[in-house]
Length: 223
Ligand code: AP5
Image 1 (cartoon, rainbow, N blue to C red):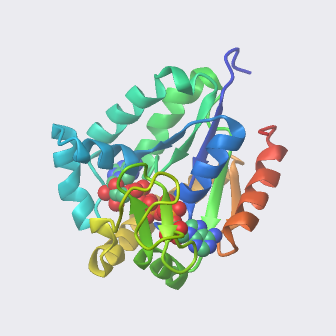
Image 2 (tube, rainbow, N blue to C red):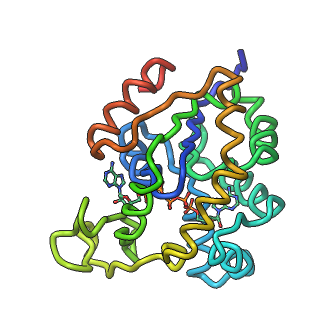
């Protein structure tokens, strides 16, 4: 066993399956930071960095941002102090190359701890994505029907304005799902073969999914 063991939870699942929603809940409960590559790209875009402007072209098309820049960004993020006990990886890895690189990165810390796989039908995913709204200021996630804010278009947490992501347009969502099946799908077998894959019924309510995740994580000593 690695002397410097850390906890790295890899959330796997299609766009809109609820990974971000659950990562934000568990980050508070477990004291492990959410490392979400999509959020990191959006942060860079908001700040008009070179990385953000590059990523935008790919995100708007529903394609993956090139591995080279994505991997460098994750390496830098995981090297920060708040990851000293581990992290919840939300949206990384997304193809077999990223998974192999992550294994190398995490080898000194005992590798990936567990991979909860969010299982949900495509029609549910499309309904969730089409109604998603996000706070421009703090990033809190809502749904117009399933998790509405108390006041229309205003964030309950910070009072910020809510917006719809550019890549949540129907034509882009279709390609995101296609890219998910083609490039991220093989990771199901990759983590299954390593004995790390745990299927979670993500069609249930937010609270039920959280309970299932907590029960699963407890089996791996994460609590
Ligand atoms: P990213 O931001 O990671 O998007 P995603 O994986 O497509 O996932 P989403 O954020 O759409 O969904 P989610 O599963 O987090 O669902 P959420 O909790 O919000 O990536 C965006 C883009 O960045 C990619 O297309 C790519 O271009 C690029 N990128 C990112 N990572 C990359 C990588 N590693 N390599 C290369 N490129 C990368 O929930 C969705 C909605 O449902 C919300 O409205 C929520 O309120 C609602 N909801 C959640 N749970 C429930 C529930 N149980 N019941 C009812 N409603 C629910």
